[in-house]
Image (cartoon, rainbow, N blue to C red; front, side, top):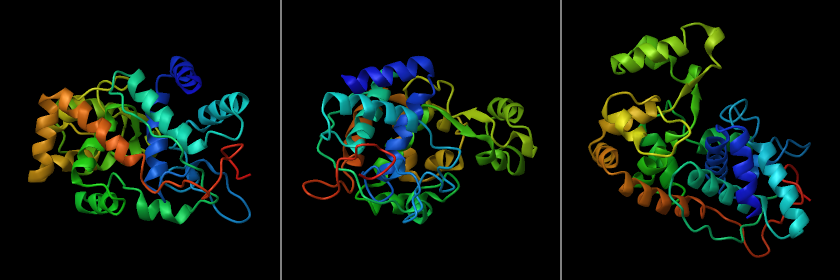
Length: 279
C-alpha cells in the first residue's frame, strides 16, 4: 500500500512518471537481471548504469524510487529490497493507467555492483534489427512472444526526437498524417534532438493503440514498425491490435517472466538501505 500510494502521488504530480517507472524496471532486469543495479550511483570501484548512453538523460524516476524506499524503510527497516520496489512500482504504474494487474512475487535482493558496459551489450536498442533484439531477450530466458508483448509497453510515454529523425527525414515511410505531425514536433535540426514525441496517441493510458499504430504504418520507433515486417511477430501485432484483452493477459504473463530474470535470493546480494548505494 505504501508503494501504491507513492506511485499514485507521483503520477498525480506528473503523468509521464508511469512510463518512466515501467521502463526503469525493464532496464534493470534486462541488464544482469532484476537486482537493482540501474539505481546505483557511480563509485570509485565501478561505473554505474545510470550514465550509460541508453540511460543517461533518458531513464528517469530515480527520485520516486528513493522516496518510496525511505517510506518503506520507516515501516519495515532492512526488509524490502529496492529491486522489489522497482517490480511493484512498475505493476502499480500499469494498473494506474488502465492496464492489467499481475502477481508480483517478493524476496528479490539487491545486487552489490553495476556494469555500465553491460548496458550497451544487453539492453535492446530501438535502431537494432528484430533478430538482434530477439537474441537479447532469449539470452535472458524470454522469447519472441515476449519481445512483441513487452514492446507494447510503448503504449505509455515518449521518445526523444533524435531516435526517430531517420524515420522522419532520411527514409520517411510513416503514414502521412503521422509523418507530418511528427516532423512538426521534431524539426530536422540538432536543437530538436531532446524534444519528446509520443510513443502512441494515448501516452498516459495503457491500451492496445500501440499495435493499431503499427498496423497503420505509424509505429514511432524503427524497432516498433519492424515487428510488422516479420511473419511471426506481424501476426501477433495484428492480433493484439484487434484484441486488447488478449494483449492485457499476455502482457501480465510476460511481466511475471521479466521480473524473475536473474534475481538474487537467500544470502546473495543484500537489502540496500538506500537505493543509490550498497550498504
